[in-house]
Image 1 (cartoon, helix red, strand yellow):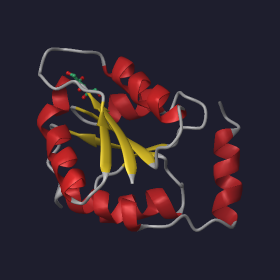
Image 2 (tube, rainbow, N blue to C red):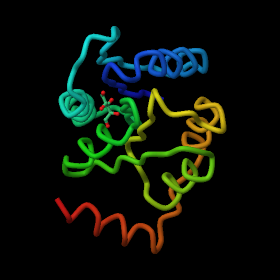
Image 3 (cartoon, helix red, strand yellow):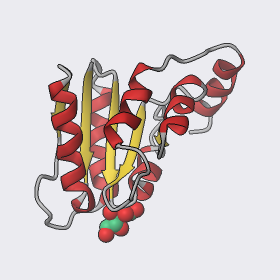
Length: 144
Ligand code: RB5
């Protein structure tokens, strides 16, 4: 898969952890930073990731900030972006099966009960179920 990733200073370590794992699995990751803990604003980082994703050719995007909250809110301001703030296997599965999320968000300062790599793996291996969920997702995309 081809994945775009961006983060703020609250998730530098987590971002590299995800990139290392994705690369080891043979995926292509485009890292838009930041790679050091100098302060940046998460809406700007979300915008970078979304604008890159919109160029096409990406399977999905990942955005990370301290909590994952601010950067997911920002990503969801863009038309066509369905960014899911996932925090375990169940929400990862539902994010794909029901919401057909094209972005996921994580928090670098969050303590997850499961390894983030596993949470991401579940999301990546899941399939959108379509049907009634497709109707709902289409309504989502009409909202902005
Ligand atoms: C930055 O300090 C922090 O507010 C940001 O990373 C994020 O947690 C916002 O939602």
